[in-house]
Length: 361
Image 1 (cartoon, rainbow, N blue to C red):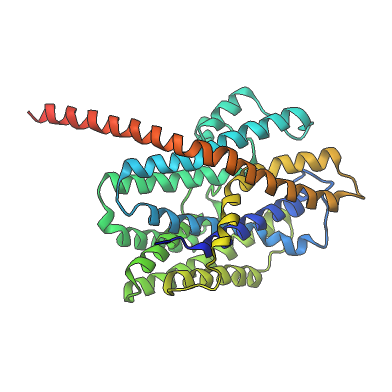
Image 2: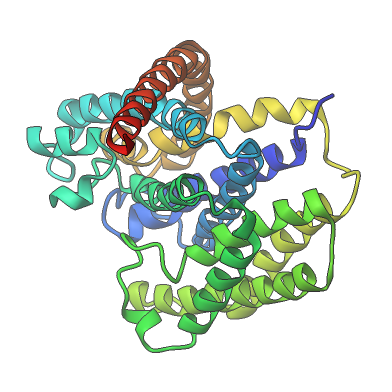
């Protein structure tokens, strides 16, 4: 029986595409990465594309909880490792190669930065990401660490309690002055933790049904989403000196929230079609390769006359590359990575259990 929620593939793809458009038509120019990509009228609309990141985190919470039904920490760790790293390492190599080739004065890579980025926890070593988009991966790893600890400590029966605490804590923190000053690019709390918790809550509601507690938490989750999106919009307005309309942000996030409510609360979904799978597989590799490579292409080949066409062509090429990475890297290497990691983890667990048994004697 097929239990895949294909509408999530569509939401994931649209979120990724929104981020690509945001980078290519807004931040490239506004942050000085690719000043040739100047679209003054278009960016009044595309500046809101960054909310795709919020949606990624909700989807991640839902999908991760769906994947840990057996409460096996080793399988969770192996599956996450095989899901993240093969495509990431290839994208890291590709971005580094293109940077060396056409990075110019704007983009550069050092040897130590490259090796720090291989770990995906480069902020802990004091090195910035080779591609700016990678900052979300460090946030994702923090979420995975929390889930792993829950599995290791066998706290799965308290999932709902932990979700409630996270949502309450994250929401309350957003109403403090500290929320505007916290390092949200490296820390998961409070700006992103609530999104992960909401995604987990959506899955538990799908699995166990709606009850007064989950209903109350969904209302709280909606409050978190609206508050965080408006607060972040206010911060974006300060950083870029361009107004981000709170009403627009509330509407966009509400549309996504209630779309996910359909997945969580209803047996069927109008977008649940198997064809959506082919959109879902593009999402992760597209996200990994699009940003800095795109900027470097614009800087190298773009001019005032062709930049619009170049952005469209680059987006299309990135989609093709994303598919090739999925077929050539993810489909080929991920199963090998997963089996190898699982075998190593199982061996480590067996050794640890034998040591504990010897000590117990």
